[in-house]
Image 1 (cartoon, rainbow, N blue to C red):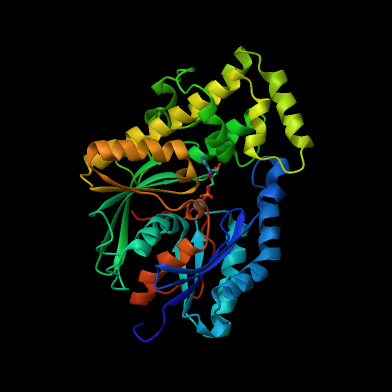
Image 2 (cartoon, rainbow, N blue to C red):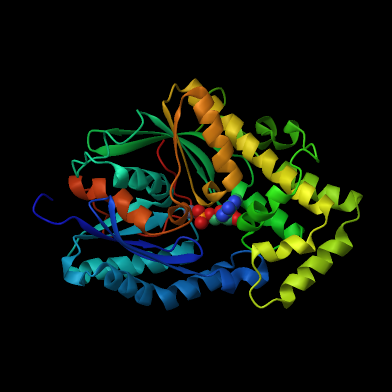
Length: 394
Ligand code: KG4
Ligand code: ZN
C-alpha cells in the first residue's frame, strides 16, 4: 500500500440512506454523499424494506458518481471499494454489495467487506484522527485516549457496547452489552409516532425535550431494566459480565400514560396539523404541544439517556477503560452528549462522539473502517453476500 494514495470508495446501503464517500488513508474525507429516503418512508412512520431496496437501486449509481465528482477523483484513481456487508436489511444490503462488487471487478481493484457497526465506531476514530497532528498514516494508534476503548453504538437498530482494541494491524471487538428488545433509537421513533410527531423520531424529541420538565414524569428504573432471566440469555454474552439494555418497558409506560391522561384527541390533532404542512420540521411541533406533552417528552428522553449513561459508565469502570466513544444516530442527541460529557469529566474518563454528520448512517465511516483492512490485504471473498444479522467481534 505504500506507493498508492490510499483512496477508498465506501458504499453504504444497509437501511434507509444510500451513501457513497471517498476517504484517503482512513482519515481524510474527500467526499461524503448521502441520499436520504426519509421522505419515502415518512408516510409509513418507519422504514419499509421493499421501498428501501427500490430507492437504493434508483440512487446508488448517481450517488457514487456524485461522490467521486465531489472528491475530484476518477474511477481509475480509487485503490479499493469498501461496502457494508451487514447487519441491515437483506434487500437493501444486496444493492450496495452487487454494485460494489461489479465496480471492483470492472476496475480490477480489491473489494473490502465492512461491518456496519464497525463503521459507526470508526466514525469517531475518523474524526479524532482528522484532528491529530502526528498521523503515521497506517494506524490509529496514538490518537486514542488509551486502550481498550468502550464503544456504545446506539442507533435505530442497535444498542451495543464493545470493548475495542487495536493490535497487530487490526481492530478487535468484544461485545459486552446489548439490548434484549428494542434499540434506543427505535424507542425514540416509536414514542414520537405514538405522540403524533414526525419520523425519524429522534430529532423531534431532541428538539422538543428542552421545553419540558425532565423530572415531571418519574419513569422508574425497573421499567427499563433488562428482564434477562425471562428473555433468555444470549449465548455470546456472559450474564455475569455483560450489560443489558431494554427499551420496550418505557415505550409501554408512555402509551399507558397517554391513555390515563386521555391525550388521544390532542395527539390526533397534532398528527393532522403536521400532515397538513408542506415540509414539517421538529420546531413546528412546539406550538402543537401542551405542557403535559412537553413534560412527558422531556421525561422520556432523560430516562433513556440516563439509562444509557449509567450502564455505559458502569461497564467502563468494570472493564477499566480510559476512554468511551458513543456513535450511531442516537449519538446526535444533544442531551445525551451533555450528560455523557459531564459524567466522563467527573470520572476523568476521555469521551468522544462523531461530528453530527458522521453520527447517522454514512459511507465515510465504512471507507474509514476499511483502511486498516486494505493495509493488511484483508479482502472480501468472491462469494460476498448480504449478512442481515452479522455480529461484530466475539
Ligand atoms: O445510525 P442511524 O442513522 O441508522 C441505524 O443504523 O439505525 O440511526 C438512526 C436512529 C433513528 O432511530 C433516529 O430516531 C435516531 O437515530 N436519531 C436520534 C437523533 N437523531 C437520529 N435519536 C435521538 N436524538 C437525535 N438527535
Ligand atoms: Zn447505522
